[in-house]
Structure formats: structure tokens, C-alpha cells
Length: 462
Picture 1 (cartoon, one colour):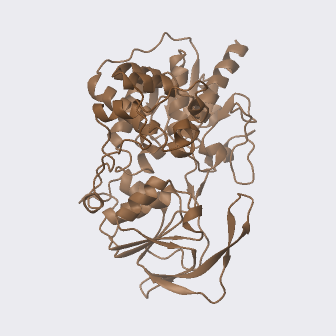
Picture 2: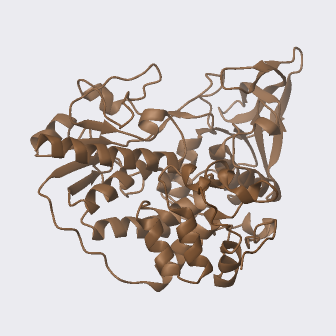
Picture 3: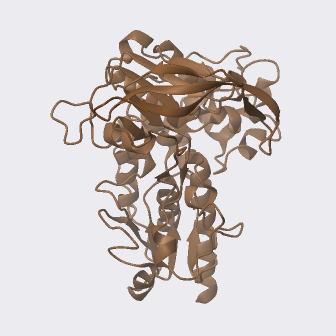
């Protein structure tokens, strides 16, 4: 029977005061009863608009139908037909602007909680099914994947299913890319990422860490080693700054460095190899998910006052609504319609404050958002001994600077066609290396598209 409740089944979470003192996962997930109740809200409507909103085209109505009937393993198998990382997607994808935004239940109430159900199914499968996957029969072809983030892992998984011998080359000492270094433990537990990667290894994917393509080995040398096609999924790990006076002071971090120390190097643990000096007051510049992650990590490190400075209003804030709400519940302050213009230091070279100006919203810019305009004479100072810049990232130039034939745009992003083919024969790319910083699921969609194109390319050559 269809559940006609207008609201989603609530997700159990840690309360704000408790969770800001630990790095445990905030959202606790549905149990079986909750999942079946929420799944019964799906109308299984004729045209399935939710699928059109999914970059990897998961058969959403089909898996939800199985959840409603209690067939959780079958639900997982349906998801896994098109998604290599369901436990990840269920946690960090912006479903509210993708699949759930197309849900017809959202017309007169809340959409079906597709993301929460995907997370439940993946978690249930991980806890209840212990079977090992067997590698498909080899087709005799080799493909190299550069970067083990969501684009690279998805491309690797899809090619492995087709029988390709796939090798993934990762620059860091652990696989997972931004899933490991960029997204905090309280949003995406790292054991879940590694479990998904283990599943790929069981399908025959090999992963070589501490391998910096462009330094330890070049793209040309990979071709010489017998790889017939190469996929570049190196992400956008080069942090952007504002070139403010005082940005080189001690206590100023890029969000990349700050989050990598917290997430990958466990800087919050006593005796960590790369500790972060505990500040008293931190200013985070930016309004996206990365800014929310940095602010919430700072609060968990024990920072007394954490302020997010963003030059537009709450309506233009690009971060997910859920992340903003969680940040507010944890005591993060929002300094909206504010913009930093100078970092102030003390006599020993440490940050002691950030000078800001108030902003007004003017006419819309090319993105469709109203352009922020400075209010003359509105300068003020926020006391701070730490400043974290979370204003976006760009692709690392290493590969394009060491490889001939790879064209890029003015932002340093690789240029590809709609299938992910670059301007270099046999080289494909996708994810943030092509689009600039975007979402996990869009990177996965690009990896999936490129895997299909690589298969077509190699089969045509043969």
C-alpha cells in the first residue's frame, strides 16, 4: 500500500552539542522498518522522472520497489548495475538538486528520500552479504586510470566488468582521492570508502599508490607499458586564493590542506604526524560544501568561535541545505554579505584578525546570481587566529605540463568531447579535471561515460 505521507521519514542523527565534540558520522541511517516505510511513499510513476536526474542513471523506482517489499539484496544489485559506489552516493550526493528534484511526490510535499534509501541499501548489503566478487573473464586489453577519486574508480569499475585489465595510479599513499582527503569522517566514514574500493579490487582492478603520473611515470610511458587507453581523473586539487595582503601569514590555510590534515592524516588525534595548532577563533571564507566541511572540522578540533564569511546572502549559499542546517546546529556563525579584504598579523607573524567589508547584492552575473557589490566605508574587523580559504580549486597542472597534445581551457581544465575524449589520441578524461570542482556524482557520471567511450575506442581499433 502506498504511503501518502507528505514528509520523508526523519533520519536519526546525533544531536548538535554531542556531535561537535566527535568525528563520528552525524546521520545514523534508517533501520529496516524506516526504510520500508519511506520506500512505500514511491508512486512508481509511469515516466520515472527521477532517473533522468541521476548522472549514473540508477533504476531508482526498481530498487525502491524492492526495498518496500523487504528485498534489500535485490535492491542493492539493481543499484550496483550502474553505480560502483552506492554507499558513498547515498551520503554525499546532492540528491535534492538531482534525482529527488524530479520526484513527483515533491510537487505537494517532500520528495521520496532516494539518497537515504540508497545509503540504507548499501549499508545493509555491507553488513549482511559477505560474498566475494570474482573477476570477469579477461578480454586481453589493458587500460590505465590516473587518479582514484570518484571519476577514476567509476571508470575502473565499469571497465573491469567488461573484462579489461585495469590499473589505477594514485599519487597519495591511500586510494580514494577526494573521498578520503576532502570529505570529513562525520559525513563519509573512511572505512566505507575502503570497503567500496575492496569491491573493485575483487573485480580485478589493481591500484598502485604513491604513483605520481607526470613524475614517477609519464602518460607516454604508460602507453609504452602496453596500456591501450588512459583515463585522467586527477580532480581539481590546486587551491585558489584571493591574493589578499597577509595571506602568507602563519595560521592561513587552504581548505585542501586543512581538510587533508584532518581527514587523511587524522590531525585531531593526539600524537598525529601533521597536527594543526588549535586556534581559538577561526574564519572560513566561502559558502560551498567545502567551507561547511572546514568549519565543522574546526569546531570539532575545539575552536571556540567559528565564522563562515560569504559575500552573498543565505539564498545564494551554494552548500547543501542539510550541511548548512547541521553547521548552524553545531554553533557555526554565518557572516553573510561580508567579504575579506585583508589579513592582519601580529608581531610574530601569526594571524590576529581579518578585515572585511559589507556587501550588497546588485544585478545578476553570468551564473544567474546577483553580483555582490561593496558598501563604501563599511570596513570592520573579525578577531581570528586562523583563516581557511574555501573559495574553490583548479586542476593540478602536472599532467598537462608533462604531456604533449592535451589541450586545456583558460582555467587549466582538460578539453574533451561529450564522451570524455581529449585532444590526445587514446587519452580520455572526466570529473573535476575537466569541469573544475563539482560534485562526486557528476564525476562518477563522467567516469561512466568515459568507460563506455574507451570500450568503443578499443573495440574499433581491434
